[in-house]
Image (cartoon, rainbow, N blue to C red):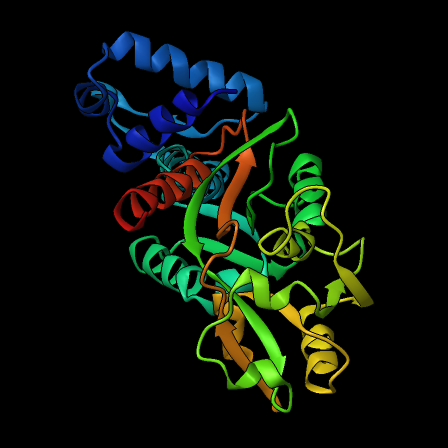
Length: 298
């Protein structure tokens, strides 16, 4: 049984006349009659009572079958519509991972809000995750889009581009002598003790120290913290200084002052990563928007 058999039957059932139904379907009356007979043979049931001059009436079985035929055709039309909209990227779902700084600068809320307004039938799910776990989640298909700290290179399966850059700041305990300075230079940091991220933590926090130390240069790292909140808490306690990207100043941990590093060796970069062979239209549509934003703001 094919959908055309159902369409033919519904047309005849609504017109109660083979010739009129055939005209509506743009086929010949004998062809339509043959198709209805074929449908009845498939079902092993009589759907129509034939009368003279192409007129028909529905049997009890035909009346019941008409309800199901209409419902099936409606579902088929809906499936076709959903398929076309999904192909255009109008519906679907996107799993998004993000690092905290992507949210703190307002970029992630802005992108989600704009995309959701224009695509109300797209579901956007977000989860905060460090950079390395996000890259693995992309490869495994758990995430579709990853807002990460820009890596030196992407895994072979992935690609990405920078969407935002911002300067580095020194997080300094309020009672520290450097807290009185308006701005901090690399020279003033050379003899300081630092709180660093754990080795398993986001590449960004290890990379943060690259803003104040050249390759091969060693820093005095007195403690490692598992996350940015712990790092800043230790700074506020006077355990050492922290190097953070500009958006992290908004976390508001008491007992800390933030001073821009005037001659930092690098900027903090937020990138968007995704699969090279991504074929979901809705994901590609989101990536295109991000590219457009990057061209405007960078």
